Image (tube, rainbow, N blue to C red; front, side, top):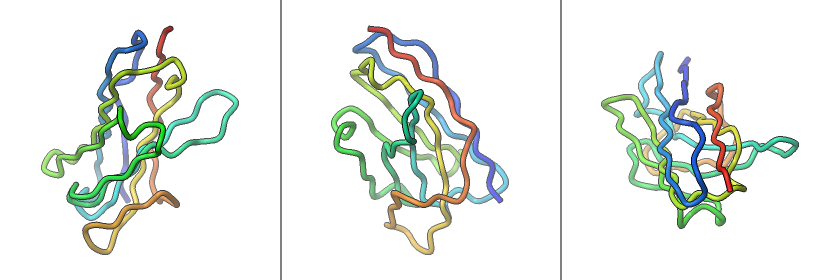
Length: 125
C-alpha cells in the first residue's frame, strides 16, 4: 500500500507560481498512474490532471491545461504539480492520488486507490 504526502502549498499572489510535490512511500511509484485533484470550500473535489506511470502521457482539465504541468521523478518517488499564472479561483486544497496501472501510457480521471492528505493553496487577489 502506497502512502502519499503533499507539500509545497502556501499563500501566493495572483499571477504567481507554486510547485507542489507528492512524495510516495511504501510502494514502487513507477507502477502507479498518478493524478492531482483540488477541492475548494463548499465544492466537490475537482480533477486537475493525470500522468502515466513513466510520465510520457499527461492529461489536464480544460481550465488548467495552459497553466499547470504535471511531472514525475520515479527515482525520487515524487510527483510534481507546477502551477503558473495562479488565479484567485485556484484557491483550494490540492490532493495527489495513485492508482496501480497495468502498463505505461494509461491515464485515469477516476477512481483512484490512494490519496494524500492534501496541501492548502491560497491565492490572494
